[in-house]
Amino acid sequence: MASDTFHHVRDFPFFEFPHGVGAEFENHGHTVYGLQLPEILGFQITKFMILQVVAAGLTLLIFRGLSKKVQSGEPTRGRFWNFWEVIALYIRDEVVRPTIGEHHHDDHGDGHGSDATGHDKKAGHDADRFLPFIWTCFFYILFCNLLGAVPMLGSPTGAISVTIPLAIFVFAHNIIAGTRQFGFVGFLANQCPPMDVPPAMKMALVPLIWVLEILGLIIKHAVLAIRLFANIMAGHTVVGVMLGFIAADGVAGTGMAYLVTPASIFGQVAIGLLELFVAFLQAYVFSFLATMFLSSCVHSH
Image (cartoon, rainbow, N blue to C red; front, side, top):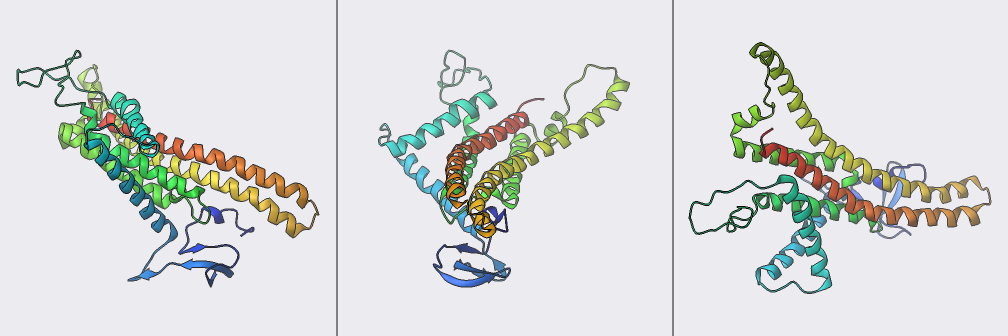
């Protein structure tokens, strides 16, 4: 709808199809053609809900298949499987392991043995226990982002109602990980850095710094939601504005359609290609920041 700049990024209780395809129904005074979604026990199903299920299904389908190939012990073959394996290994080797780091293990003669750095070979890398969560965040968000490149669909991550729960899940996961590492009281105490100051000054500074650190922890996770939402929404909004120039020219009757239409289409294609890059970039940024915040929760201040 040319009058609504944000129509392209809104969530609706229907899928809208062009050229009169599908059922006809009204939406805020406008005639819409498409597939209207049902209301189940008073709960309205929306387009972004369906697309989130699709993104979760793609994540599960692809990586269950990849995990079975890896478990066979044979090298993964095929460009499709190699593509996803390369991305997964990059997240592991360039994001999770370097960011979270590894604790040193003492060799107590249990037969595990240690490598040149003194790390327990059998135990593996400490950061790997957090990999399933970070991998799930990355690929789920990536598929949510990429669905926006498919005509008549959309990016669920372009809605703040989707990115806020994602940030809450990351926040809860990190709090639980920190609590398991230090205990609940130890985790809370760990939020305040050690200070070599006189006792009287310490009594005044510790509560203040602790409150600031707790607020900072909450704000950092809130930024995860806002950053992802704003970047994905902005890209789709620009695409809508670019194409809206064509409709605006038709309504105004300027007779410049032969110039406006090609320019708008070229701009939309260019922004669309940029959005493909942003889809991967924002999934990476979300996962990287989530890993950084996780690292701060499981390590001493």
